[in-house]
Length: 257
Image (tube, rainbow, N blue to C red; front, top):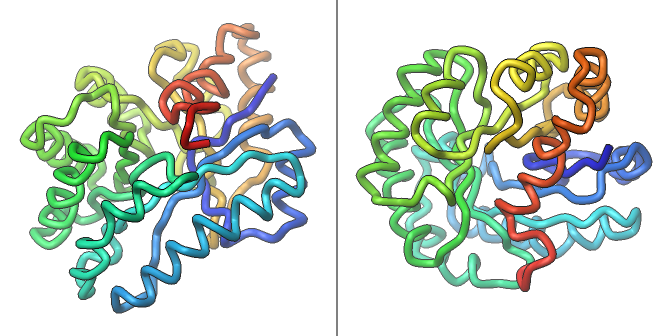
Protein backbone atom coordinates (compact mmCIF):
# COMPACT_ATOMS: atom_id res chain seq x y z
CA UNK A 1 0.00 0.00 0.00
CA UNK A 2 1.18 3.55 -0.77
CA UNK A 3 1.26 6.15 1.99
CA UNK A 4 0.82 9.93 1.99
CA UNK A 5 1.01 11.23 5.57
CA UNK A 6 -1.44 14.13 5.51
CA UNK A 7 -0.26 15.79 8.75
CA UNK A 8 3.03 15.66 10.59
CA UNK A 9 5.68 17.93 12.10
CA UNK A 10 8.95 16.95 10.45
CA UNK A 11 11.02 19.61 12.23
CA UNK A 12 10.49 17.72 15.50
CA UNK A 13 11.84 14.42 14.16
CA UNK A 14 15.33 13.17 13.38
CA UNK A 15 16.65 12.36 9.93
CA UNK A 16 16.76 8.68 10.93
CA UNK A 17 13.04 8.79 11.69
CA UNK A 18 12.28 10.49 8.38
CA UNK A 19 14.26 7.74 6.66
CA UNK A 20 12.29 5.08 8.56
CA UNK A 21 9.01 6.53 7.28
CA UNK A 22 10.35 6.44 3.74
CA UNK A 23 11.53 2.86 4.17
CA UNK A 24 8.06 1.57 5.05
CA UNK A 25 6.54 3.29 2.04
CA UNK A 26 5.71 6.91 2.86
CA UNK A 27 6.09 8.63 -0.50
CA UNK A 28 4.84 12.09 0.44
CA UNK A 29 3.77 14.10 3.48
CA UNK A 30 2.82 17.60 4.56
CA UNK A 31 4.57 19.21 7.52
CA UNK A 32 2.39 21.75 9.29
CA UNK A 33 3.22 24.73 11.48
CA UNK A 34 2.57 24.82 15.23
CA UNK A 35 4.97 27.34 16.72
CA UNK A 36 4.33 26.52 20.38
CA UNK A 37 6.62 28.44 22.72
CA UNK A 38 7.23 31.41 20.44
CA UNK A 39 6.12 34.82 21.61
CA UNK A 40 6.64 37.23 18.71
CA UNK A 41 6.33 37.53 14.95
CA UNK A 42 10.09 37.50 14.31
CA UNK A 43 10.39 34.08 15.90
CA UNK A 44 7.40 32.78 13.95
CA UNK A 45 8.79 34.03 10.64
CA UNK A 46 12.12 32.31 11.30
CA UNK A 47 10.22 29.14 12.14
CA UNK A 48 8.20 29.31 8.92
CA UNK A 49 11.41 29.79 6.95
CA UNK A 50 12.89 26.64 8.46
CA UNK A 51 9.77 24.61 7.72
CA UNK A 52 9.62 25.79 4.14
CA UNK A 53 13.29 25.58 3.19
CA UNK A 54 15.19 23.12 5.40
CA UNK A 55 12.67 20.36 6.03
CA UNK A 56 11.75 19.52 2.40
CA UNK A 57 15.45 19.33 1.52
CA UNK A 58 16.09 16.98 4.42
CA UNK A 59 13.17 14.72 3.49
CA UNK A 60 14.28 14.67 -0.14
CA UNK A 61 17.49 12.88 0.89
CA UNK A 62 15.29 9.85 1.55
CA UNK A 63 13.07 10.31 -1.53
CA UNK A 64 10.18 11.52 0.62
CA UNK A 65 8.45 14.49 -0.98
CA UNK A 66 7.47 16.98 1.70
CA UNK A 67 5.05 19.86 1.23
CA UNK A 68 4.67 22.66 3.78
CA UNK A 69 1.66 24.16 5.52
CA UNK A 70 2.01 27.57 7.15
CA UNK A 71 -0.27 29.35 9.58
CA UNK A 72 -0.89 30.30 13.19
CA UNK A 73 -1.96 27.41 15.42
CA UNK A 74 -4.48 28.11 18.22
CA UNK A 75 -1.72 27.60 20.82
CA UNK A 76 -0.29 30.92 19.58
CA UNK A 77 -3.56 32.84 19.96
CA UNK A 78 -2.41 34.87 22.97
CA UNK A 79 0.86 36.02 21.37
CA UNK A 80 1.54 39.19 19.40
CA UNK A 81 1.67 37.90 15.83
CA UNK A 82 0.17 40.83 13.97
CA UNK A 83 3.21 41.19 11.71
CA UNK A 84 3.24 37.47 10.93
CA UNK A 85 -0.47 37.56 10.11
CA UNK A 86 0.06 40.52 7.80
CA UNK A 87 2.96 38.75 6.06
CA UNK A 88 1.19 35.38 5.81
CA UNK A 89 -0.23 35.90 2.27
CA UNK A 90 3.28 36.55 0.95
CA UNK A 91 4.59 33.37 2.55
CA UNK A 92 1.69 31.34 1.24
CA UNK A 93 2.58 32.35 -2.32
CA UNK A 94 6.01 30.70 -2.13
CA UNK A 95 6.84 27.51 -3.98
CA UNK A 96 6.53 24.43 -1.76
CA UNK A 97 3.76 25.87 0.42
CA UNK A 98 0.80 23.61 -0.34
CA UNK A 99 -1.65 24.49 2.46
CA UNK A 100 -2.55 26.78 5.33
CA UNK A 101 -2.20 25.07 8.65
CA UNK A 102 -2.51 24.05 11.06
CA UNK A 103 -5.01 26.54 12.37
CA UNK A 104 -8.23 26.03 14.25
CA UNK A 105 -9.53 25.92 17.80
CA UNK A 106 -8.29 24.33 21.01
CA UNK A 107 -10.50 25.80 23.74
CA UNK A 108 -12.81 27.85 21.52
CA UNK A 109 -11.82 31.13 23.17
CA UNK A 110 -12.57 34.50 21.61
CA UNK A 111 -8.86 35.01 20.83
CA UNK A 112 -8.66 31.66 19.02
CA UNK A 113 -11.85 32.33 17.09
CA UNK A 114 -10.60 35.75 15.95
CA UNK A 115 -7.28 34.25 14.84
CA UNK A 116 -8.88 31.49 12.78
CA UNK A 117 -11.41 33.91 11.27
CA UNK A 118 -8.62 36.20 10.09
CA UNK A 119 -6.74 33.30 8.53
CA UNK A 120 -9.79 31.86 6.77
CA UNK A 121 -10.25 35.26 5.13
CA UNK A 122 -6.69 34.98 3.83
CA UNK A 123 -7.30 31.38 2.73
CA UNK A 124 -10.19 32.48 0.57
CA UNK A 125 -7.99 35.13 -1.03
CA UNK A 126 -5.02 32.89 -1.80
CA UNK A 127 -6.95 29.77 -2.81
CA UNK A 128 -4.99 27.23 -0.75
CA UNK A 129 -6.46 24.25 1.08
CA UNK A 130 -6.78 24.64 4.85
CA UNK A 131 -5.99 22.16 7.64
CA UNK A 132 -8.04 22.77 10.78
CA UNK A 133 -7.09 21.57 14.26
CA UNK A 134 -9.71 20.22 16.65
CA UNK A 135 -8.99 19.44 20.31
CA UNK A 136 -9.00 16.32 22.44
CA UNK A 137 -11.21 17.88 25.12
CA UNK A 138 -14.76 19.04 24.40
CA UNK A 139 -14.15 18.01 20.78
CA UNK A 140 -17.73 17.83 19.54
CA UNK A 141 -18.78 21.28 20.78
CA UNK A 142 -15.57 22.92 19.54
CA UNK A 143 -15.91 21.17 16.17
CA UNK A 144 -19.42 22.61 15.80
CA UNK A 145 -18.04 26.06 16.65
CA UNK A 146 -15.24 25.67 14.13
CA UNK A 147 -17.56 24.54 11.34
CA UNK A 148 -19.79 27.53 12.04
CA UNK A 149 -16.78 29.82 11.56
CA UNK A 150 -15.93 28.04 8.29
CA UNK A 151 -19.51 28.61 7.13
CA UNK A 152 -19.37 32.30 8.02
CA UNK A 153 -16.15 32.62 6.02
CA UNK A 154 -17.98 31.15 3.00
CA UNK A 155 -15.05 28.82 2.41
CA UNK A 156 -15.82 25.87 0.14
CA UNK A 157 -15.84 22.57 2.11
CA UNK A 158 -13.80 21.01 -0.71
CA UNK A 159 -10.72 22.99 0.41
CA UNK A 160 -11.10 22.32 4.16
CA UNK A 161 -9.62 19.37 6.06
CA UNK A 162 -10.96 19.04 9.62
CA UNK A 163 -8.32 17.08 11.45
CA UNK A 164 -8.21 14.90 14.57
CA UNK A 165 -11.70 13.59 13.87
CA UNK A 166 -12.87 10.67 16.02
CA UNK A 167 -16.00 8.58 16.55
CA UNK A 168 -17.87 11.45 18.22
CA UNK A 169 -17.26 13.96 15.40
CA UNK A 170 -17.04 11.85 12.24
CA UNK A 171 -20.67 12.18 11.17
CA UNK A 172 -20.72 15.92 11.97
CA UNK A 173 -17.70 16.62 9.79
CA UNK A 174 -18.93 14.34 7.02
CA UNK A 175 -22.27 16.17 6.95
CA UNK A 176 -20.42 19.50 6.55
CA UNK A 177 -18.87 18.36 3.27
CA UNK A 178 -15.34 19.00 4.55
CA UNK A 179 -12.54 16.46 4.30
CA UNK A 180 -12.12 14.19 7.32
CA UNK A 181 -8.73 13.78 8.97
CA UNK A 182 -8.13 10.62 11.03
CA UNK A 183 -5.05 11.03 13.21
CA UNK A 184 -3.51 7.70 14.18
CA UNK A 185 -1.62 8.77 17.27
CA UNK A 186 -1.44 7.73 20.94
CA UNK A 187 -3.49 10.81 21.87
CA UNK A 188 -6.05 10.35 19.09
CA UNK A 189 -6.96 7.09 17.34
CA UNK A 190 -5.42 3.64 17.58
CA UNK A 191 -4.87 1.80 14.29
CA UNK A 192 -7.75 -0.49 15.22
CA UNK A 193 -10.18 2.40 15.80
CA UNK A 194 -9.14 4.13 12.57
CA UNK A 195 -9.63 0.92 10.60
CA UNK A 196 -13.07 0.39 12.13
CA UNK A 197 -14.09 3.92 11.09
CA UNK A 198 -12.98 3.15 7.53
CA UNK A 199 -14.95 -0.10 7.64
CA UNK A 200 -18.07 1.66 8.88
CA UNK A 201 -17.99 4.80 6.71
CA UNK A 202 -15.67 4.02 3.81
CA UNK A 203 -12.70 6.10 2.59
CA UNK A 204 -14.60 8.89 0.80
CA UNK A 205 -13.14 12.31 1.76
CA UNK A 206 -11.03 10.64 4.47
CA UNK A 207 -7.29 11.18 4.99
CA UNK A 208 -4.97 9.43 7.42
CA UNK A 209 -2.04 10.97 9.22
CA UNK A 210 0.44 10.17 11.98
CA UNK A 211 0.80 13.67 13.49
CA UNK A 212 4.34 12.70 14.52
CA UNK A 213 5.93 15.68 16.21
CA UNK A 214 7.51 16.56 19.51
CA UNK A 215 5.18 14.36 21.59
CA UNK A 216 5.47 10.56 21.75
CA UNK A 217 4.00 9.11 18.55
CA UNK A 218 4.13 6.05 16.31
CA UNK A 219 6.14 6.37 13.10
CA UNK A 220 4.47 3.13 11.94
CA UNK A 221 0.88 4.28 12.55
CA UNK A 222 -0.15 4.26 8.88
CA UNK A 223 1.17 0.78 8.01
CA UNK A 224 -0.28 -0.54 11.27
CA UNK A 225 -3.66 0.86 10.23
CA UNK A 226 -3.25 -0.68 6.78
CA UNK A 227 -2.67 -4.05 8.45
CA UNK A 228 -5.83 -3.63 10.52
CA UNK A 229 -7.73 -2.80 7.32
CA UNK A 230 -6.50 -6.01 5.72
CA UNK A 231 -7.62 -7.95 8.79
CA UNK A 232 -11.08 -6.46 8.33
CA UNK A 233 -11.08 -7.51 4.69
CA UNK A 234 -10.97 -3.97 3.31
CA UNK A 235 -7.89 -4.54 1.17
CA UNK A 236 -7.39 -1.96 -1.57
CA UNK A 237 -10.81 -0.48 -0.87
CA UNK A 238 -9.18 1.64 1.84
CA UNK A 239 -6.29 2.85 -0.37
CA UNK A 240 -7.78 6.33 -1.07
CA UNK A 241 -7.62 7.21 2.63
CA UNK A 242 -3.94 6.29 2.76
CA UNK A 243 -2.77 8.04 -0.40
CA UNK A 244 -5.10 9.17 -3.19
CA UNK A 245 -7.31 11.56 -1.18
CA UNK A 246 -4.32 13.48 0.19
CA UNK A 247 -2.87 13.71 -3.33
CA UNK A 248 -6.11 15.29 -4.52
CA UNK A 249 -6.54 17.63 -1.56
CA UNK A 250 -2.98 18.95 -1.59
CA UNK A 251 -2.63 19.06 -5.36
CA UNK A 252 0.26 16.59 -5.32
CA UNK A 253 2.42 16.79 -8.46
CA UNK A 254 0.89 20.19 -9.17
CA UNK A 255 2.89 23.41 -9.65
CA UNK A 256 3.42 24.04 -5.94
CA UNK A 257 5.21 20.72 -5.44
